[in-house]
Image (tube, rainbow, N blue to C red; front, side, top):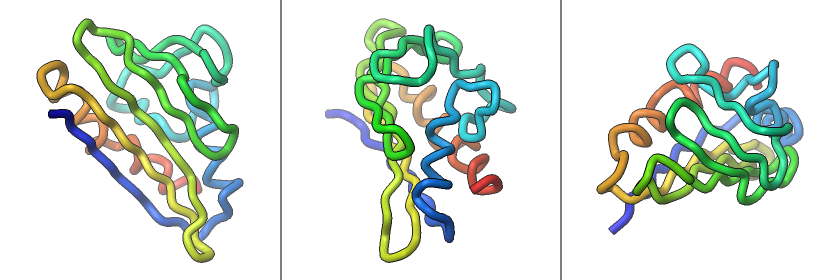
Length: 129
């Protein structure tokens, strides 16, 4: 049985403005990742489909990316850490929702993924959207 951890936040901002937070991931102007508490997210190239990298010992690649709308990362390491981490922007009756979802095998890495999702990862962007 796997774990699915979902966090969402609504904004009075356009999908373009909120979507730009996703596009900033791993850039010098990253406005979404909780840099104060987590190792920086880094990739072998700019955020795009297939970009490989991670943060600290957690390795992943961009399995799906639609600019300013969504990104899904597939975990590669550590061994046994099987799952995904994604961000998505949606229009919800005139408001914009930024969602973060992590799915993983609880036998490997429950503490790491669980603490990231409850950390400042989604809180940081609330101030900038």
